[in-house]
Image 1 (cartoon, rainbow, N blue to C red):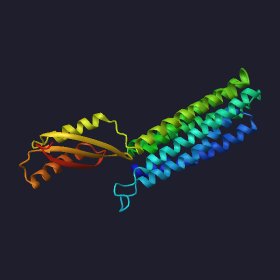
Image 2: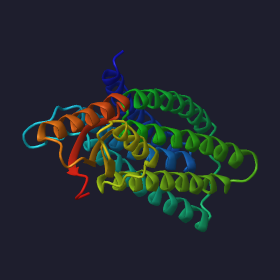
Image 3: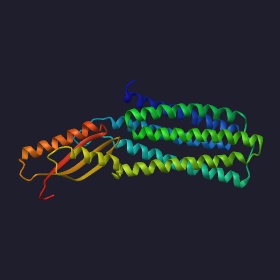
Image 4: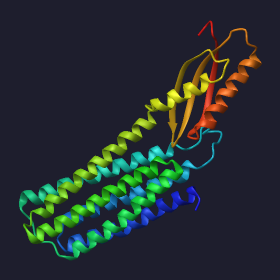
Length: 289
């Protein structure tokens, strides 16, 4: 299966799985009086919107450049990842509030055993979705799919906490149910903060891959006419990198010769680094540089 189709499958399947699990957990959580399962269901409900955002981000990110978006649409994936993070933060705060409220007022009924079965089903499905989304993210170099994989992984931990909460509430003490629900909420809040922080960094063009920048300098310096690399900057466009570079050459070179040097540097960089989508090379005379 082609990487793009696998990415769409992971996004669409993520929506379907989250819809089924959110409905199942909320219904069973209410009927079986399992606070931790209900909390996990609300988390999955937020994931429905998050998965839709990821699916849209992946689809839009593959739209070719046009006159209004000459660099392409890959930043749609960063926008999608930010939406995922915000939804997770909101869901986490809601779960934390409701769980703390139940624990404070002492409303701790013993959950039904069916809640444990639902938690096991969720654990298996979410583990499978994690590996599918991770594989699709690696093949597509997709930040949105990688964010979705992280979300599915957090859901696995949430399902484990739900299972533990139900069993401990039944076997030890009822207060373990809302107590473990609070743990689920903290996992959700943490994962949401991570995604929002990374998405904001990408949208603000933060670039801290020093190893790549050093490699780009070495590629440029491999051209014999390049006297010095004056500067190199990078920024993310979705999963790809755009590069701006300044090099210094002898001042007596012709315009054609300087252009040929810049072309060599550009082609060398793009051949050695598939993640680099575009390179702009500005040529300065060595004396001015």
